[in-house]
Image (tube, rainbow, N blue to C red; front, side):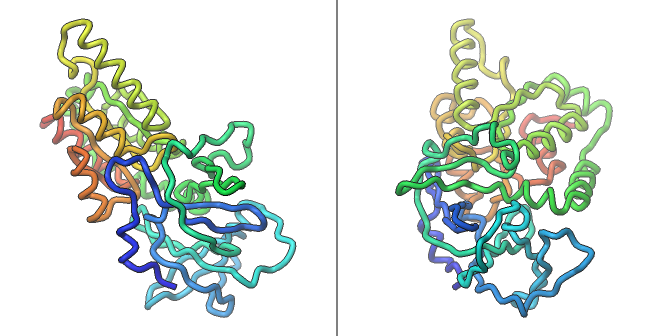
Length: 319
């Protein structure tokens, strides 16, 4: 049941604002996750799982996959979904992102859907219990598929590990006073739909001395802001980089993804402003896609130190 590398052909093309969503079930509800995060599907076998009684309840344990121990999360337990009966179709979604391989137990898998990010709707804030754990929803074939924010889920289950990664990455930032002062007058646009990612990026940029960052939750809002600045610069008869110095964007976002936003900005501004992709999905193939839409560089979440170094290079900031 491995997801073959041949399936790379169906992944989103650069800047088309499309994504492949793998649909799965938890109880009677359909959920989805970006195919780019799925390494493979593995049949669920309770006997193969080693449990740790001291671990959080949602941590089902660990299992061995080709000689590597993989942490395993039970999504039904984590999301507090009441299942009426044990599913005989259980599957483990083996994912890879943020330089981490993790397994997630689900009740069954359905199919892969190719959809536009425009079709993914932002979750209504009224759904307070799970809002941060969902990136959006898409209505397909008469039902709603809820898109899970797996990065946020992992940060909740492993908070200490997440905090240590953030701390270790921030220690890589050069906080020399002369460099920090040069960063201080730069105007930065950050675009990311994840609340925990926005907080992490903001904290890292503040630590580095990049104190003037404006933040938006998706590519559509980010693009509208850039268009407003372009119009303002044309009205004032001034260069665009007097209004904005650099853009940092995620890839996965409802309404418009970061690759599409970057492509549209490049169509208007050519190479007038550096664009850095900061995503959990950076692979060799995704790096090529970033380059094809005109990105100046890319860094893998949650490595904020690498991001700041790229920003410094793009803005020619040195000690």
